[in-house]
Image (tube, rainbow, N blue to C red; front, side, top):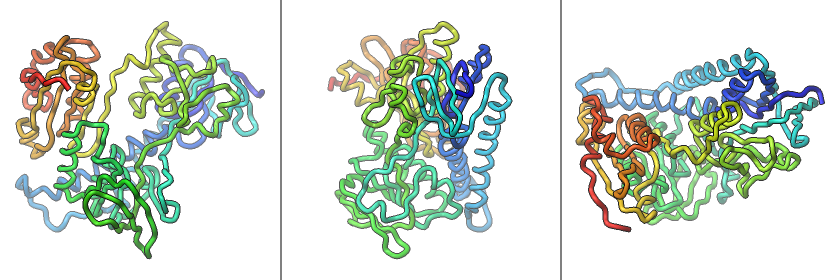
Length: 461
């Protein structure tokens, strides 16, 4: 063994670097190992690049709508994709380089570039170097899953990573997968100028959401000229000259769709298959996710798993919260648990979807007596003034104890406005506390108390 440390962190994603900061500040000697790009999925192939591209796509979309606002533009709106990519790359590089610089300049922190593999429950090998520690934290993230679809190995395809390198706008992008990642890229590239078709195996888009949310998003896509093919139970692909043919079995529509590019957006898989976890005694589930308890400890004492690789969350904010849980428990005498956090996330189409807690369907299935408040965005002054009145807001409340069970805000600012509901739920306050709070006019969030004042009882499921 070349050197021992107090802690080893494998992976410099969203949980690893801040954990290194806390541990070194506590006087520990820390080794952090990164085999590829600092910042993990979020910085390199997730939130940072995609939301930068979404911003460019939104500018193009708003420019085309300029006449609706009394603004005249000369000439046709066009997208310079190399410049769009250059802007995206610069934003990503600034974030990634800043993180790496911070880690390399951190006192008591040693940075290793390379692929870490376990040698034993307390030792890790990076190339020819073996290092050891009494505490090891795994933060290796995940990558796009490529399912064994018929013929997919015979055609060129894109994933959420490789599509970020495009410097031209696809003539016709076929998006396989009608969930969160697929929908963001579908709208983005439609606004860049592509013809876009979304192919979804299930009966509707984002099946985890309520049916009214799925229907509203499909309507938003239809208004922008995005084709949606659901119930595509049997898919196959083949190359036909310069075209890629997708054969689908759907309830309606042509059995074949010809496209120029295919994006596979059908889920993720953890980067755990080449870490030597068996040599450390770290158990995984059937999908490769590392099994952890409520404190994020693995089956091997002294080893924790944080972020996407533990299957307890697939978001940057849950990965960061993993860091907070581990740091609080190790350094602050805390007893924080994964189950303490309230599920919340957003879908970054335009308008965005902000979500927290249970869906209406989940609340009904739980057997609770519930009340629901609804308001279309056409009755939200800020949305109307901005010319963005698509969508709605919905809040689900427990009739017995006045607890807010969940909410969906699909509309302009929905990803921000939903936080007032998240905060109220986290405070374990009754809905009446938020209902009776004065919000600023004109905002989207000001209508949340109004919705809570108009709750309607629902019939039991």
